[in-house]
Image 1 (cartoon, helix red, strand yellow):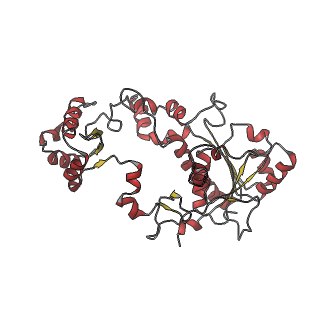
Image 2 (image 1 turned 60 degrees about the horizontal axis):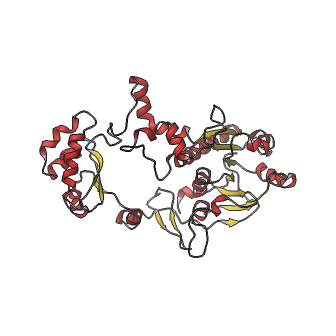
Image 3 (image 1 turned 45 degrees about the vertical axis):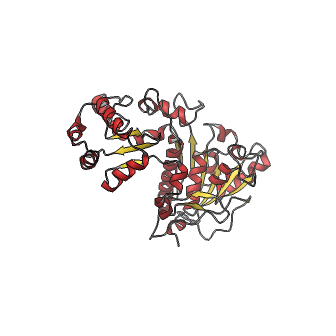
Length: 372
């Protein structure tokens, strides 16, 4: 028995969200045992039409992000359909939506409306910039949030670098799950639900705790390739090998840096770890060393030393690696889909595979409400 599957047993989640952030949050809630009913628009979720198809012609992205959930289609603009939805909401514990601020209210399914019929509902609204502020109604995607949160500017070399997977979307999903579980715990004490206003751009601020604290204390705004974490340090950087592959040196603490320098046959580099940023001269020398070695030679020399030098694997190589195989957290379901499962083993056991998404327009019988 995978214990985390039972932690939200009896919790009912209505999912009105689309694309990645909200659906990832509800996927994780389903992993924790919640019953998730995804409500799609009449034409179906946009993710059904985006991305690759499997051999059977099914949408890979949609199936991946909605495994373990039930789904139905509703036109909430129609009064009779909205009444059906409100009946579901009356017996729900959580609602997750990703409309622009104000849209849910105009549809008659906003927090004020739902809390009147269900005072215990935990309502999580996930939008780009939150419900207030000058950007509340602005369009945006992950790259926009990274740019406006000060993340994009300081990462990369000559130009700001974007990330894959999307940072704001995934961080927003994780913070949503944390907030929802905290709200359910609070409801268990006083019986009251709440409205959670989660802006994806806001989710990037806690990820920058060090940088924001430094800015507050010294007025320092880090620049590209000029800090330990963004490529300014020789001991924490990506290097290219002679066979056009890449290795990562992550020897940011002294113990591992000493081991690396000695294994490289360059003990004279040890004291240079404290040279001012950016350490361009030292970076050039380390790069010159790696340029003489293939990736296999790098692994052969540095892996036995345990000095935080690792190959930059492709996704295919990572999926086939002994580490991922041993952890059993990325594996195929009985239906054949390769799934990235909840990333925690419990009592020595990995989580079970997710069942495929299923069509369903009502709640299953509930053994008992959690957190009521």
